[in-house]
Length: 123
Length: 279
Image 1: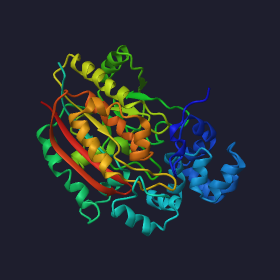
Image 2: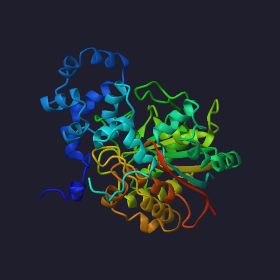
Image 3: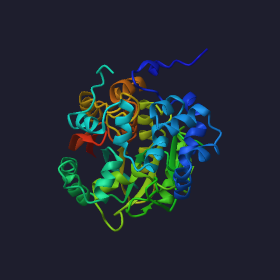
Image 4: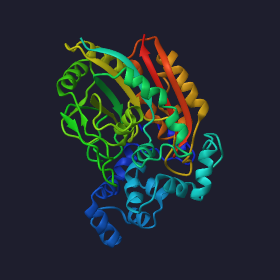
């Protein structure tokens, strides 16, 4: 019998559950490595070589190189781990959030000032 | 005996910590957030506890994908502010209360809540931002802090009811400790927010206000709210709000709400804040 996942159909949302966590283990562990300044430098110097040190799937590596956060999340990434990537890039949470919504950072920031996205808004 | 006198709920948005650290609290964007804590800073000066039992979540800092405890109690002498990727926050080291923490751990585990005991841990913005909001920028924090980390990063977090019942067990543990201590319990995180995917930026004021109302006056019913309702209504990261139920469970059935504040936005998040006294 499979587990009930009533959250599977929430629009625009991937819930980081045990299955996603298992898929994303190496991706998220790679992200954690960026907590160390020396690793950040090595990653920035040659991203591909650094990524090849981790047993991640080719799809995961490609999503990191493209900074495609939605894809990384689909492949098991969790935003708190992925935050280490955009922190390494010197980018803010709002930058990443805007990117994932397909909005400019300016439009996204304005939406937040105006009260944020309605939970019932169509995506 | 130790006494549990009050509970505080507050969001712990990292950008709030950065605003404090970088001296931006009077900027137009941040001013309304900090104004909501002016009363609280005076209240905590008048009601400084000996110990804060601080419920929070770690954000991929102390707990990596290698180790994901559902409930973890900090029993160390001290906890250093963590380097979350851009250097540690310039805030004081958090001093624990190992003897009291060990007592609580033993009592709560004997009440059927299987805690993970942590004797070495750095603490991230989830713990230090609430301290900054209430205490400002002191050279040393004015009281001891027992960090209590809850997994709300990997789904499923503990249920609301599990958290609420845990709060009751913590209350019993506090009150069986043979020392004259004034203890507060803080619940942090929330309110509505979603940081991931095309739905990022979600805010739900109606849900948040109902949550605040129920947390004060009808916590038993609120504790039964299923996870799916948090995910749909308060966003994938809004589920952090279950941690507020641990705080509420540790208080009396009837409490005095002495301060309530709500503001949108702080970065991507709705900020909520309550001070509840055990009357």
